[in-house]
Image (cartoon, rainbow, N blue to C red):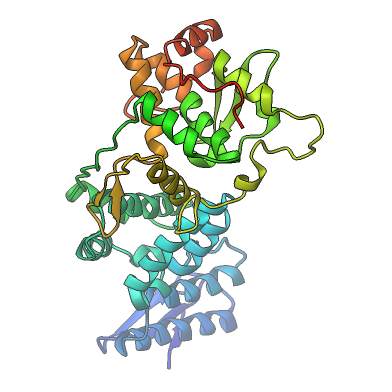
Length: 381
């Protein structure tokens, strides 16, 4: 059992206890209260015994020290387990699609860690991060998917570092030591003639969604979720917040698209969505919007050119996202510079932007005049 002693000119009791090696040692308890000092001395010795038996993990050490700090009115040491911290981090993701994507990565990572997921964040090393990346590679996943998984987990550990739970980000180090080289599958563009054929084959609200894709370059989810308050006929613009990057995009409405929208506008409907039956549907999955668009393409006689992708999934060189590439390419081919194109379709960097507000709206209108007409019929629906 641990004992106490007092040294000359020292007001605090000294704990005398046995180390896990078997030797005796002295350590200050930091208190002049003999009863409290004995409790601390006993905790010192118990910690040594647990360490000798292999039971003294970091979380136990932290609890012991926090108990002592709390009794003395001091701030406790911060710490959290990997699993708890990541689950709390997920709760802050309000976008349903984002949360679903991130939750899957977290689940797979925690499973890969095994019992280590119950330990403190500081126990995760760059070797654990590298091992996880290798496990994803072993599944033959696309390099882009693996890099995205690693970046998601790196953002979790970056937050933990900012909060003081850890000193180093294990994924940052793992990626620095062995970067993931991404070779993206090549997406093709539609010709205006192909877009016209797809539009003709489409029925109902799909016609509107397809035109939004061509005339704005917006993503499928944004096209399907457009609301009438995003369309300002007086100013001749479509003004919306891009869902992926939360960036505001202002797109001039070309006369051909303006005529179409005016034709389907109704003062009788109270539904805020322009295409209400498609607005709440998922984009992915067998019954998602992407697959529905692919079926329209096939019906129109346009080959999606589906090939084996880099990962397990097949990859279609032509898809709804190709409309985004189409808008960008057609504008480029007609002399519209990169900065203007990025502002028009809502990109955020020159690699994938500059804020559209730095550009004059008349300049954007002038640029959109370069987009080839689809020669839409007068009666669109």
